[in-house]
Amino acid sequence: MSRPRILVVDDEPQIRRALRVALRANGYDVDEAETGGEAIDAVALDRPDLVILDLALPDLDGVEVCRRLREWTQLPIIVLSAHGDDQAKVRALDEGADDFVTKPFSVPELLARMRVAIRHASRVNPEGDQVVWAGEVKIDLSRRVVTRAGAEVHLTPTEYGLLRYLAQHADRVITRGQLLRAVMGPGYADATGNLRVYIVGLRKKLEANPSRPRLLVTEPGVGYRLRTE
Image (cartoon, rainbow, N blue to C red; front, side, top):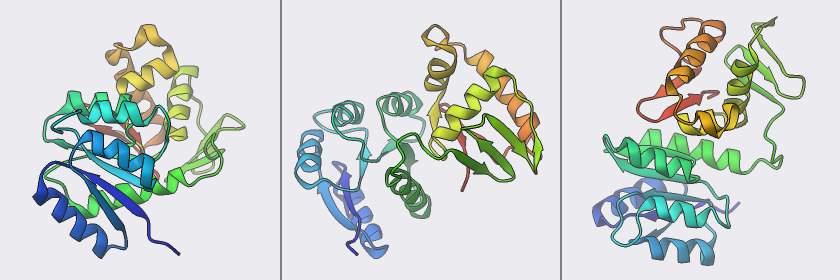
């Protein structure tokens, strides 16, 4: 079997070198690009399995690269961002990035995020799995039934809509704006206070310890992730 091919896009040579060494040691082939323009050309020519994309590039910023790539490809994109750069993370995710890792990053964490993104991209069913498991919680999307440890969990329509969207994008970080627009409509894109209330309600019904959630986790400054891993 061929090794997955990863395109690393970063204008810092030391970052590219560190990623090249780590990825090759873990069974990946690596291509590199220093600018957003080079990245777009490399994706078009070489069709990598995943892109690791720095947000601070000398020509196009990473958000614009995400937007342009998403016009014609759905390959997984993981963005690298500086610590605290929450607005840029949200913009990149809203433009189609699959996940993000904050610099300085942990190689094991990056590898785990890559495995999830590549596995999700390889699924042949474009609608996603019809049954999603998160710990002992079973979300049957075709029947619209949620159970925990075999017992049915009764959710409000909005709670179910939020959980369904998260389940359809399981293990991906979803921004608050994405969730609100998808479930409540574009007019509610800034209703983050309402969203927090619904998330608290879901955790009370789904988590063993709602004050320390393990399934429906917060990505600080960005949004939420339904964890199945």
